[in-house]
Image (cartoon, rainbow, N blue to C red; front, side, top):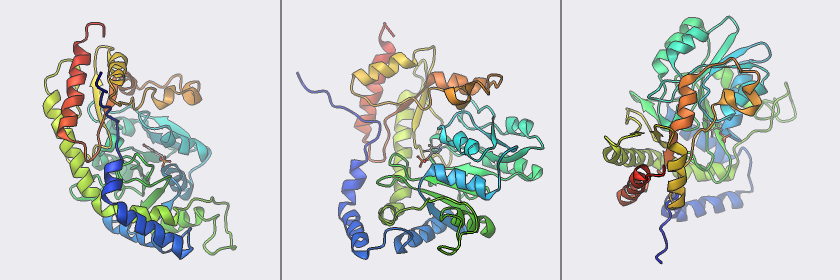
Length: 374
Ligand SMILES: *Cc1c(COP(=O)(O)O)cnc(C)c1O
């Protein structure tokens, strides 16, 4: 019997191997420097990110979760405040709101983009609304122009969750540069990824930047002169040094992801029961997420797994229906997100994925759909 060739949902090895020597040199440079927290690599990476994103300030942090949390703290959001967000995201988006003591208000998504619906955001604004957190889910820019218009009129800050969209741009401007804060994650599966946890906050507001810098360092501007209760949330020197090697290649990696997405789209066009994602301007395809109609998603997922194809369901339960929130949000209806949770399936994608591998995934997907017992 020939061994079946397994296809993972994400393969990080090609980019590591392609830059092996540089990564090793950077690693050794940090080891020799003896500086591991808030040293020269971190400062240089912040400067390089600010330039890349086109923002005034970039601040390295422990994680994308911390970026959201620190953004809300810097905006002085807490008990009694409402923050509007999407129910179709990773839990961390809402978790950050809960952690500062505020109340998440879940607003339904658009059918085609999986992103928060600006018209529904407008309708959900109350005098207690203190921020809006849209997510550029799967790397697709949300309707940021409509949202910034609505938010500006109501004088409400926007905190963009860019964990899945580093490098996504609309008309040349980076996602994360339009709102008060852009929050990024360098978790190993993200488009720009570290060898461990990491995150970053971007802002054009000098005062908010200073607050965020204080919050990541125990509420101090100067060591041992603490002015408020902050946190310990810094991007390590080793991670910063590694990320500095990767950042210059990000645009080309994101373009390669789009090439893979286009190849998938060509092959999935017209396939009954499957809806492929649109390839829109600025999309960086953190995930290539299709919909499988007619209640067959779980069976197709299992069929592909059985054939050695790695796929994932992002996300099987909308946030307002997760155990932690379901009781408090029993009356919240987000039918578009609820339907999406039952239909989505993310297929393998990474920058170096070959078109032959795309063909193989699509062939097996077609076999899954044709199987009588599904
Ligand atoms: C990954 C992710 C986060 C959290 O980032 P971490 O670095 O893992 O803390 C937040 N929001 C979204 C949408 C994410 O995908």
